[in-house]
Amino acid sequence: MPYIDEHRQKIEAPVDRVWTSLLNVLRGGMVGGPVARILGCDPVEGTTAFEGRPGEALPGFRVVEAEPGRRLALRGRHRFSDYALTFVFEGDQLCAQTHAAFPGFSGWLYRAAVIGSGGHRLVTRRLLRQIARAA
Image (cartoon, rainbow, N blue to C red; front, side):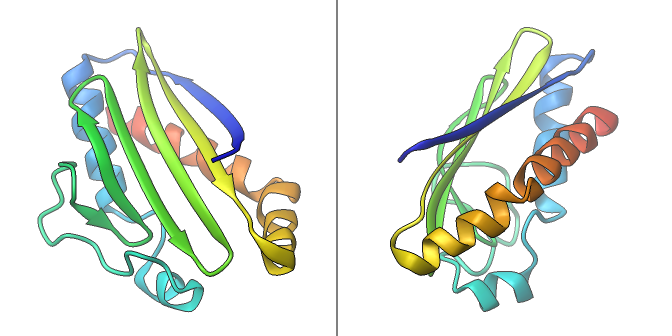
């Protein structure tokens, strides 16, 4: 998938605490169930006791790779996009990397609305700040 962007947040906390905070914030919901249904997300619902293991899901995302304290890779899709969000631990920083494809005209419009507007950047940075505060 094409590269979209990368955001970093310095977090001065032990890696295991940052990992736990990452999972707790993700459990709290990046994409709510109603939004996931409207967009036609796959998956639309999350794993009941989400622990960040491969195959587990959050609304709009499925864990495809998990190395506690090092890397958590999520993927998903909906009617306008196929996307990946990967969290990488690098020293005292947590990095969020986004890749996505936006097929067709409706995908182009969706990309303009979400990426072009700066909305994705704001949401991703907010997510990283939430994780830092939780840690």
